[in-house]
Length: 96
Image 1 (cartoon, rainbow, N blue to C red):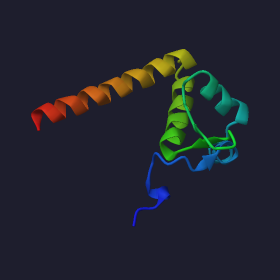
Image 2 (cartoon, one colour):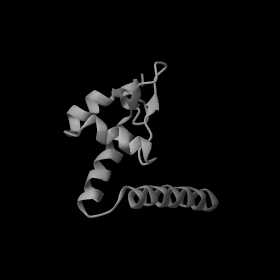
Image 3 (cartoon, rainbow, N blue to C red):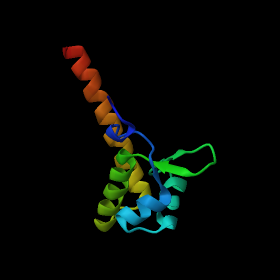
Image 4 (cartoon, helix red, strand yellow):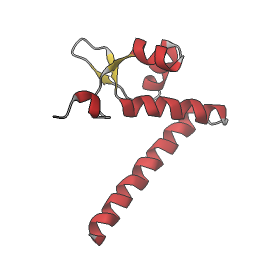
């Protein structure tokens, strides 16, 4: 049996939980959403819900900010990483 906790994409964590886990302010997480860097899912009530994958993205954002990138730069890095992953999947399909 597969549980939602097993799914890295399942939006299980509230903004408060993520804030506590990572030691970041709620405002920081809201800013990442507003700047289109990390996009949490919204609950029916409109609250942000984060998956484990999105939490990993927030951790990556903190690391890249420490290295001197801006949020716009980080957004572009994430876009390019997604594009590379898509191209690698296409290549694997063509080879397979």
